[in-house]
Image 1: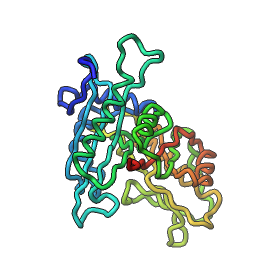
Image 2 (image 1 turned 90 degrees about the horizontal axis):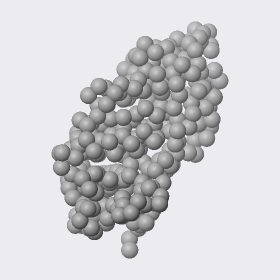
Image 3 (image 1 turned 135 degrees about the vertical axis):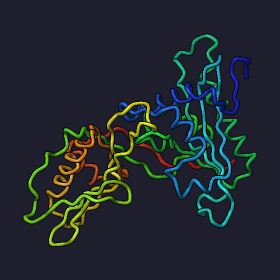
Length: 309
Protein backbone atom coordinates (compact mmCIF):
# COMPACT_ATOMS: atom_id res chain seq x y z
CA UNK A 1 0.00 0.00 0.00
CA UNK A 2 1.45 3.37 -0.97
CA UNK A 3 1.67 6.38 1.31
CA UNK A 4 -1.26 8.00 -0.54
CA UNK A 5 -3.67 5.14 0.25
CA UNK A 6 -4.57 4.12 3.79
CA UNK A 7 -7.30 2.08 5.47
CA UNK A 8 -8.27 3.15 8.96
CA UNK A 9 -11.23 3.39 11.36
CA UNK A 10 -13.87 6.02 10.62
CA UNK A 11 -13.34 9.39 12.29
CA UNK A 12 -16.09 11.90 12.94
CA UNK A 13 -14.44 14.41 10.60
CA UNK A 14 -15.08 11.89 7.78
CA UNK A 15 -18.84 12.31 8.16
CA UNK A 16 -19.44 14.62 5.18
CA UNK A 17 -17.38 12.57 2.73
CA UNK A 18 -18.94 9.32 3.98
CA UNK A 19 -22.43 10.80 3.54
CA UNK A 20 -21.52 11.83 -0.01
CA UNK A 21 -20.41 8.26 -0.73
CA UNK A 22 -23.65 6.84 0.73
CA UNK A 23 -25.79 9.29 -1.25
CA UNK A 24 -23.94 8.63 -4.51
CA UNK A 25 -24.74 4.92 -4.20
CA UNK A 26 -28.32 5.65 -3.12
CA UNK A 27 -29.01 8.04 -6.00
CA UNK A 28 -27.96 5.40 -8.53
CA UNK A 29 -30.81 3.20 -7.25
CA UNK A 30 -33.66 5.50 -6.14
CA UNK A 31 -34.08 8.80 -8.04
CA UNK A 32 -33.76 11.85 -5.84
CA UNK A 33 -33.17 9.90 -2.63
CA UNK A 34 -30.62 11.26 -0.16
CA UNK A 35 -29.93 11.02 3.55
CA UNK A 36 -28.50 13.52 5.99
CA UNK A 37 -25.16 13.45 7.79
CA UNK A 38 -27.06 12.89 11.04
CA UNK A 39 -28.77 9.82 9.59
CA UNK A 40 -25.46 8.28 8.53
CA UNK A 41 -23.83 8.94 11.90
CA UNK A 42 -26.80 7.50 13.78
CA UNK A 43 -26.79 4.35 11.64
CA UNK A 44 -23.16 3.69 12.58
CA UNK A 45 -24.12 3.62 16.27
CA UNK A 46 -27.45 1.83 16.12
CA UNK A 47 -30.31 0.91 13.81
CA UNK A 48 -33.45 1.94 15.70
CA UNK A 49 -35.80 0.52 13.05
CA UNK A 50 -34.26 -2.94 13.64
CA UNK A 51 -35.68 -3.19 17.16
CA UNK A 52 -35.35 -7.00 17.25
CA UNK A 53 -32.01 -7.59 15.53
CA UNK A 54 -30.07 -4.49 16.59
CA UNK A 55 -29.90 -5.39 20.32
CA UNK A 56 -28.13 -8.59 19.29
CA UNK A 57 -25.12 -6.64 18.00
CA UNK A 58 -22.03 -6.89 20.22
CA UNK A 59 -19.59 -4.78 18.21
CA UNK A 60 -19.71 -2.30 15.33
CA UNK A 61 -16.73 -1.21 13.25
CA UNK A 62 -16.66 1.28 10.38
CA UNK A 63 -13.59 1.35 8.14
CA UNK A 64 -12.68 3.85 5.43
CA UNK A 65 -10.11 3.87 2.66
CA UNK A 66 -8.55 7.29 2.21
CA UNK A 67 -6.60 8.39 -0.83
CA UNK A 68 -5.00 11.84 -0.81
CA UNK A 69 -7.45 12.95 1.93
CA UNK A 70 -10.44 11.69 -0.05
CA UNK A 71 -12.66 8.86 1.25
CA UNK A 72 -12.92 6.52 -1.75
CA UNK A 73 -14.31 3.41 0.00
CA UNK A 74 -16.03 2.54 3.27
CA UNK A 75 -17.55 -0.46 5.02
CA UNK A 76 -19.63 -1.05 8.15
CA UNK A 77 -19.22 -4.34 10.04
CA UNK A 78 -21.29 -5.95 12.77
CA UNK A 79 -20.55 -8.80 15.18
CA UNK A 80 -23.56 -10.54 16.73
CA UNK A 81 -23.47 -11.95 20.25
CA UNK A 82 -23.15 -15.67 20.91
CA UNK A 83 -25.94 -15.76 23.50
CA UNK A 84 -29.15 -17.81 23.77
CA UNK A 85 -31.42 -14.77 23.25
CA UNK A 86 -29.87 -14.09 19.81
CA UNK A 87 -31.60 -15.63 16.80
CA UNK A 88 -29.91 -18.84 15.71
CA UNK A 89 -29.09 -17.57 12.21
CA UNK A 90 -27.34 -14.50 13.66
CA UNK A 91 -25.68 -16.04 16.71
CA UNK A 92 -21.87 -15.67 16.65
CA UNK A 93 -21.78 -14.30 13.08
CA UNK A 94 -20.01 -11.38 11.49
CA UNK A 95 -21.67 -9.19 8.85
CA UNK A 96 -20.43 -6.62 6.39
CA UNK A 97 -23.62 -4.58 6.69
CA UNK A 98 -22.59 -2.51 3.66
CA UNK A 99 -19.53 -2.01 1.47
CA UNK A 100 -19.18 1.02 -0.81
CA UNK A 101 -16.47 2.34 -3.06
CA UNK A 102 -16.03 4.86 -5.85
CA UNK A 103 -15.66 3.00 -9.16
CA UNK A 104 -12.26 3.68 -10.72
CA UNK A 105 -11.98 5.58 -13.95
CA UNK A 106 -11.21 3.52 -17.02
CA UNK A 107 -8.46 3.75 -17.94
CA UNK A 108 -7.10 4.74 -14.55
CA UNK A 109 -5.25 8.01 -14.36
CA UNK A 110 -1.48 7.78 -13.74
CA UNK A 111 -0.88 7.04 -10.07
CA UNK A 112 -4.62 6.50 -9.44
CA UNK A 113 -5.17 3.89 -6.72
CA UNK A 114 -8.96 4.04 -6.28
CA UNK A 115 -9.22 0.68 -8.02
CA UNK A 116 -6.96 -0.83 -5.37
CA UNK A 117 -8.69 0.89 -2.50
CA UNK A 118 -11.69 -1.43 -2.60
CA UNK A 119 -9.50 -4.53 -2.57
CA UNK A 120 -7.37 -3.22 0.29
CA UNK A 121 -10.48 -2.27 2.27
CA UNK A 122 -12.04 -5.69 1.70
CA UNK A 123 -8.85 -7.33 2.96
CA UNK A 124 -9.15 -5.22 6.11
CA UNK A 125 -12.80 -6.28 6.50
CA UNK A 126 -11.90 -9.96 6.25
CA UNK A 127 -9.10 -9.46 8.74
CA UNK A 128 -11.55 -7.87 11.19
CA UNK A 129 -13.95 -10.80 10.80
CA UNK A 130 -11.04 -13.15 11.45
CA UNK A 131 -10.12 -11.29 14.63
CA UNK A 132 -13.70 -11.65 15.83
CA UNK A 133 -13.48 -15.47 15.46
CA UNK A 134 -17.07 -15.65 14.22
CA UNK A 135 -18.50 -18.95 13.02
CA UNK A 136 -19.87 -17.48 9.76
CA UNK A 137 -19.39 -14.40 7.59
CA UNK A 138 -22.14 -12.62 5.70
CA UNK A 139 -22.55 -9.45 3.64
CA UNK A 140 -25.40 -7.23 2.48
CA UNK A 141 -26.08 -3.64 1.47
CA UNK A 142 -28.30 -2.22 4.21
CA UNK A 143 -27.82 1.52 3.81
CA UNK A 144 -29.90 3.94 5.93
CA UNK A 145 -31.64 5.05 2.72
CA UNK A 146 -35.18 4.44 1.44
CA UNK A 147 -35.37 1.37 -0.78
CA UNK A 148 -31.68 0.42 -0.56
CA UNK A 149 -31.38 -3.10 0.81
CA UNK A 150 -29.01 -5.74 -0.48
CA UNK A 151 -26.63 -5.19 -3.39
CA UNK A 152 -28.56 -3.71 -6.34
CA UNK A 153 -27.66 -4.33 -9.96
CA UNK A 154 -26.57 -0.69 -10.27
CA UNK A 155 -23.53 -1.55 -8.13
CA UNK A 156 -21.59 -4.02 -10.31
CA UNK A 157 -18.36 -2.61 -8.84
CA UNK A 158 -19.49 -3.70 -5.35
CA UNK A 159 -20.70 -7.10 -6.51
CA UNK A 160 -17.34 -7.71 -8.18
CA UNK A 161 -15.38 -6.97 -4.99
CA UNK A 162 -17.64 -9.25 -2.93
CA UNK A 163 -17.27 -12.06 -5.46
CA UNK A 164 -13.48 -11.77 -5.60
CA UNK A 165 -13.38 -11.91 -1.80
CA UNK A 166 -15.28 -15.21 -1.78
CA UNK A 167 -18.81 -14.01 -1.05
CA UNK A 168 -21.64 -15.78 -2.90
CA UNK A 169 -25.21 -14.56 -3.29
CA UNK A 170 -27.34 -17.17 -1.49
CA UNK A 171 -30.42 -15.15 -0.51
CA UNK A 172 -33.45 -13.94 -2.43
CA UNK A 173 -33.59 -11.33 -5.18
CA UNK A 174 -35.99 -8.45 -4.58
CA UNK A 175 -37.56 -6.23 -7.24
CA UNK A 176 -37.88 -2.58 -6.23
CA UNK A 177 -40.42 -0.49 -8.15
CA UNK A 178 -41.47 3.15 -8.00
CA UNK A 179 -44.59 5.00 -9.09
CA UNK A 180 -45.35 8.69 -9.30
CA UNK A 181 -48.37 9.24 -7.08
CA UNK A 182 -50.05 11.17 -9.90
CA UNK A 183 -49.88 8.00 -12.04
CA UNK A 184 -51.76 5.85 -9.52
CA UNK A 185 -55.45 5.18 -10.22
CA UNK A 186 -57.71 8.13 -9.50
CA UNK A 187 -60.02 7.70 -6.50
CA UNK A 188 -63.32 6.30 -7.65
CA UNK A 189 -66.42 4.38 -6.61
CA UNK A 190 -66.02 1.10 -4.75
CA UNK A 191 -65.84 -1.98 -6.99
CA UNK A 192 -68.63 -3.61 -4.95
CA UNK A 193 -71.77 -1.80 -3.72
CA UNK A 194 -71.58 -1.18 0.01
CA UNK A 195 -67.78 -1.49 0.22
CA UNK A 196 -66.11 1.22 2.29
CA UNK A 197 -62.55 2.32 2.91
CA UNK A 198 -61.49 2.62 6.53
CA UNK A 199 -58.28 4.40 7.61
CA UNK A 200 -56.53 3.23 10.79
CA UNK A 201 -53.03 2.93 12.20
CA UNK A 202 -51.48 -0.40 11.28
CA UNK A 203 -48.32 -2.10 12.59
CA UNK A 204 -46.19 -0.57 9.81
CA UNK A 205 -47.95 2.67 8.90
CA UNK A 206 -51.29 4.12 7.83
CA UNK A 207 -53.62 1.26 6.88
CA UNK A 208 -56.44 1.63 4.35
CA UNK A 209 -58.81 -1.31 4.71
CA UNK A 210 -61.59 -2.27 2.33
CA UNK A 211 -64.66 -3.30 4.37
CA UNK A 212 -67.69 -5.18 3.12
CA UNK A 213 -70.52 -6.49 5.23
CA UNK A 214 -68.61 -5.86 8.46
CA UNK A 215 -65.57 -7.86 7.34
CA UNK A 216 -62.16 -6.91 5.97
CA UNK A 217 -61.81 -7.51 2.24
CA UNK A 218 -58.16 -6.46 1.88
CA UNK A 219 -55.83 -3.65 2.89
CA UNK A 220 -52.85 -1.54 1.89
CA UNK A 221 -50.47 -0.04 4.45
CA UNK A 222 -48.41 3.07 3.72
CA UNK A 223 -45.19 4.18 5.41
CA UNK A 224 -45.05 7.95 4.96
CA UNK A 225 -42.14 8.49 7.39
CA UNK A 226 -39.31 7.85 4.90
CA UNK A 227 -38.55 11.56 4.45
CA UNK A 228 -38.57 12.89 8.00
CA UNK A 229 -36.52 16.12 8.05
CA UNK A 230 -34.10 14.86 10.71
CA UNK A 231 -33.43 11.74 8.67
CA UNK A 232 -32.96 13.10 5.16
CA UNK A 233 -30.97 15.80 3.46
CA UNK A 234 -33.98 17.12 1.60
CA UNK A 235 -37.69 16.38 1.58
CA UNK A 236 -38.40 14.14 -1.35
CA UNK A 237 -42.04 13.34 -0.65
CA UNK A 238 -41.44 9.59 -0.83
CA UNK A 239 -43.55 6.84 0.75
CA UNK A 240 -43.51 3.05 0.65
CA UNK A 241 -46.10 0.29 0.55
CA UNK A 242 -45.29 -1.39 3.86
CA UNK A 243 -47.93 -4.10 3.50
CA UNK A 244 -50.49 -5.19 0.91
CA UNK A 245 -52.91 -8.03 1.52
CA UNK A 246 -55.64 -9.22 -0.80
CA UNK A 247 -57.51 -12.53 -0.54
CA UNK A 248 -57.21 -15.00 -3.38
CA UNK A 249 -60.80 -14.37 -4.42
CA UNK A 250 -60.52 -10.57 -4.27
CA UNK A 251 -62.57 -8.54 -6.74
CA UNK A 252 -60.38 -7.81 -9.80
CA UNK A 253 -60.84 -4.06 -9.32
CA UNK A 254 -60.03 -4.07 -5.60
CA UNK A 255 -56.27 -3.44 -5.98
CA UNK A 256 -56.84 -0.42 -8.22
CA UNK A 257 -59.44 0.96 -5.81
CA UNK A 258 -57.09 0.59 -2.83
CA UNK A 259 -54.34 2.32 -4.79
CA UNK A 260 -56.80 5.10 -5.61
CA UNK A 261 -57.44 5.53 -1.90
CA UNK A 262 -53.69 5.48 -1.30
CA UNK A 263 -53.20 8.18 -3.95
CA UNK A 264 -55.76 10.43 -2.30
CA UNK A 265 -54.12 10.05 1.11
CA UNK A 266 -50.56 10.45 -0.21
CA UNK A 267 -51.48 13.64 -2.05
CA UNK A 268 -52.80 15.07 1.22
CA UNK A 269 -49.51 14.01 2.86
CA UNK A 270 -47.48 15.82 0.22
CA UNK A 271 -45.93 12.59 -1.09
CA UNK A 272 -45.26 12.42 -4.82
CA UNK A 273 -43.54 9.01 -5.13
CA UNK A 274 -44.43 5.54 -3.86
CA UNK A 275 -42.05 2.58 -3.52
CA UNK A 276 -42.97 -1.08 -3.46
CA UNK A 277 -40.88 -4.24 -3.23
CA UNK A 278 -41.56 -7.87 -4.13
CA UNK A 279 -39.52 -11.03 -4.43
CA UNK A 280 -38.38 -11.90 -7.93
CA UNK A 281 -40.53 -15.05 -8.02
CA UNK A 282 -43.70 -13.06 -7.24
CA UNK A 283 -44.16 -12.33 -10.94
CA UNK A 284 -47.93 -11.94 -10.69
CA UNK A 285 -47.69 -9.17 -8.10
CA UNK A 286 -44.94 -7.39 -10.03
CA UNK A 287 -46.96 -7.49 -13.24
CA UNK A 288 -50.12 -6.30 -11.47
CA UNK A 289 -48.34 -3.31 -9.97
CA UNK A 290 -46.76 -2.41 -13.31
CA UNK A 291 -50.28 -2.00 -14.65
CA UNK A 292 -50.90 0.78 -12.12
CA UNK A 293 -47.91 3.01 -12.86
CA UNK A 294 -45.08 1.22 -11.07
CA UNK A 295 -41.76 1.03 -12.91
CA UNK A 296 -38.93 -1.29 -11.96
CA UNK A 297 -35.93 0.50 -10.46
CA UNK A 298 -33.66 -2.39 -9.64
CA UNK A 299 -33.24 -6.03 -8.75
CA UNK A 300 -31.26 -6.30 -5.57
CA UNK A 301 -29.40 -9.36 -4.27
CA UNK A 302 -30.07 -9.93 -0.57
CA UNK A 303 -27.87 -12.15 1.56
CA UNK A 304 -24.27 -12.99 0.65
CA UNK A 305 -22.33 -15.78 2.40
CA UNK A 306 -18.56 -16.13 2.56
CA UNK A 307 -17.34 -19.51 1.45
CA UNK A 308 -14.67 -21.08 3.68
CA UNK A 309 -11.19 -21.36 2.21
